[in-house]
Length: 196
Image (cartoon, rainbow, N blue to C red):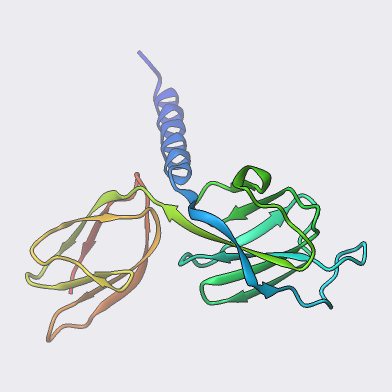
């Protein structure tokens, strides 16, 4: 028979492995084919350490909070809603895209058919695949409105499919004070109970 401490260590190890696997289940991907934007050029004032005009990659994505790295160092980044422009040395071979809750995504430029040249701009569209988990939200009153990340959920259900991580939960019902809070969804944290 195992000692209670052995069981506790085994339980904590299993929770750690489940959480690690849940974090690694989300992955980034390229949508479509990268394309050279013939109508766009890099400003000649944006130069790399060798004094050459940079090449650029325009990353288009509906995902927020993307960060980037490259083998030779990114010279400059400009950000707009849904768009990040990376200014790189023309000799750059790879970039890595990072997003919290997703595996790092390394893009080997040559493998994607991208040949960087000074002054040229390429476009890549990136999206993410996230595996959802079922959570239960129990509220002491019937016919409440539940929103998760601003999306109204189906009434009459207590079970909702949600992407793991921090989610914004809103529970409301006419005549009652609304509940608005962040919940941390994970395979080990799927039950939520509320009283209005």
